[in-house]
Image (cartoon, rainbow, N blue to C red; front, side, top):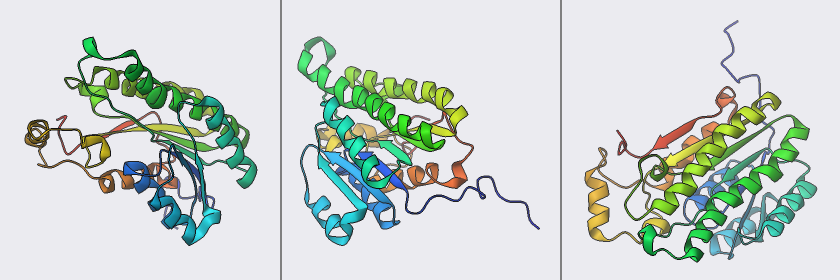
Length: 254
């Protein structure tokens, strides 16, 4: 008989229970739509409900768990994770996607803007990973994916504070991969380049054209360029992959 491929014997639970932060728009919406379409149970939150949530719950409300939660509210996030666990009995994966970017030189940036990015991009990711990993540790399995950014690796003028928060996510990924690996919990990160989402709408024409010129593939990315990699990392085929930061940027960091 042919030898089994790595991870082939580890068939995923069907449906899986996947928490995705910030899933009502942009990249998060793309993740929610994809895993919902695959038949998984998707639990997501955002500050405001959107038409996407209404649409998917109309298709199958049982498989789309949604709450309005502010990612800066640690108690609300903790209650969200608890509610998901109580309803479905397990949490198989976490995608730390919620993010916020304020641009501007650090010397003139307000405390409030710095605090918002630290709270949403880094602190919320840590707290969600903590709450979900507690449940995963009891189950002896799980996967966490942190959505970082190429800005964490290369920097960009006017995004120093944002870069710091996203670099923190990479550090968290590496530390947790070692910490949780012995319990069969994998932790990886994705570092996307600039994407055609709400977060890139603040770019002016000069900035946009500059980024495109520096990208070998000659365009900004799309959520559809990121989703397949996350799908793979949550699959049995990635059973021996942890502690990795995968860059998806059209070659702009080459």
